[in-house]
Image (tube, rainbow, N blue to C red):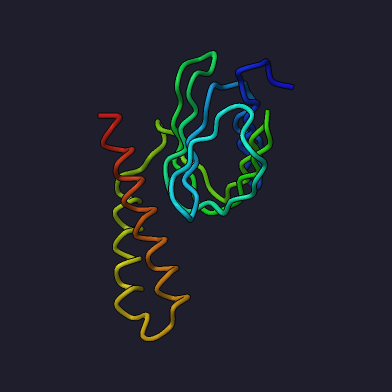
Length: 139
């Protein structure tokens, strides 16, 4: 259980728990837009898109991760993020990010009238751009 004024945040991928610590706030890239979660927030579930997850006020300082596609569960003193993929800042591969964006652009050009294909292409493009943004920040 988190201390008063803090949130317990758990970041989980299909193969491991990456983070399980207390923070002051967390910014989550939901499909509806970026949301900042503070202690005592109202409960909710949100679909995660591709974007940067920011943990603020942790014992080790602020942290950022590129996450993509999953679910965020928000409770008053806890946030659990289940993400399909997480890139740690030191592991971002700029070449892979560029290839992801190019693949999304090609898919977008061939999506035809299929809204799901357009959405998938847009998700790939956003994920590639977000990875590129984080790759640039570390240089």
